[in-house]
Length: 196
Image (cartoon, rainbow, N blue to C red; front, side, top):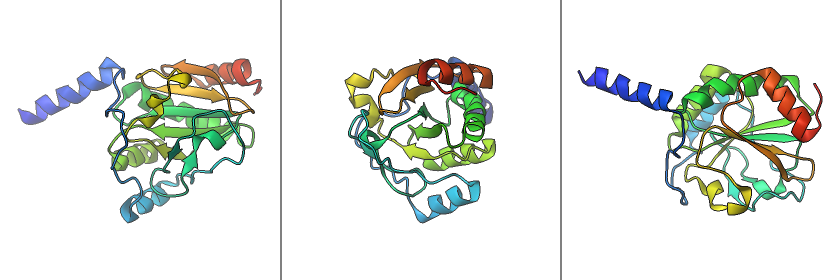
């Protein structure tokens, strides 16, 4: 009976969408860089995070790389870039990740794709990315600190994707799932001027 109830609870979460953050916005003490997580990330083939070298317009918020690697100051990032906010228990996030991997592969050297995992279960996040075959870098924000910057205009809804232009400014925020590679191409063309 407990297994049935647990399965029903998971189904309700996946079908209900992802309007609430999985954790309160606060500085988190969740460890996202341990020897076990580094090993799990390496086995999954997830790329290391790459700190920016520019003076972008995102908030000055330094976040760790999921599963180890260099920390990333968001204010140093410039595009063209997609930054996708997600967590592994979000059904639409799970459906969207393979499309973002296609963008990562098809727009290599033209558009950076970065995941921003907002959950307190880094093992689950890496495991899910591994299952999908998502190899693009993943930043961790288990406390949801990115929502503290009111100027960004982020909602507590998942997934959402920030389209960051060459100056490091957010050109557009897609709230909700990107449903297809064609939709992703249209959004990249419209908001970042990047053609297929």
